[in-house]
Every structure is written in structure tokens, then in C-alpha cells.
Image 1 (cartoon, rainbow, N blue to C red):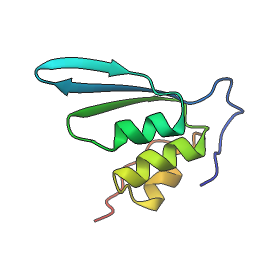
Image 2: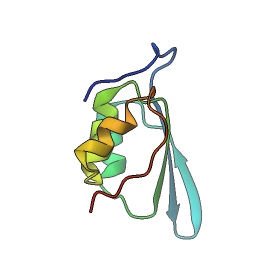
Image 3: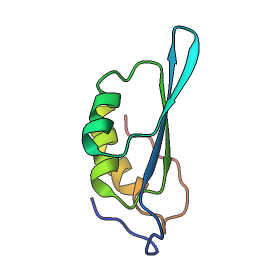
Image 4: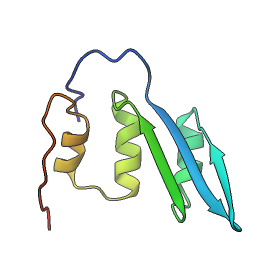
Length: 88
């Protein structure tokens, strides 16, 4: 993957929201290891991604959820217009 777009002003930030025993638990992992721990149990998890310039972070999430490689490329191409495609 290669980031396409304007030079980012900030790093990619992740905010994880997880439903645990009826309560919403929020976390904001900073390291790759912390991200891997959060992704190890993807059930009941909402991931809010701010910025897509850090390719390794995006790839880690995409691989966890088995996101198609062409969609991964589209995710990190911020100069592209929005579109809909069926990859089935």
C-alpha cells in the first residue's frame, strides 16, 4: 500500500469503542502492540480512524477484517472521489 494524498499534518489516530457487559468502554491505543491486543477480540468493536497516512496501522486493521486489497488501496488514496464497487 502507498498513501496518496496531501502530506498529512498528524499521525493516524485510533479510537476503539467496545461494548462490554452492557457498558461502552473506550480506548486509544498508541503502539502497534496495543492495537494488536485490541484487535485480537474484534467482537463488539467500533473503530474510529482519524487519518490514513500510516500504512502499517491501516494494513493491520484491514488484515484483521480481511478487507480486499483493492479496497485497502482505495482507503489510503485520499485524492480519489468516493465510489461504490462490488468485490464479491
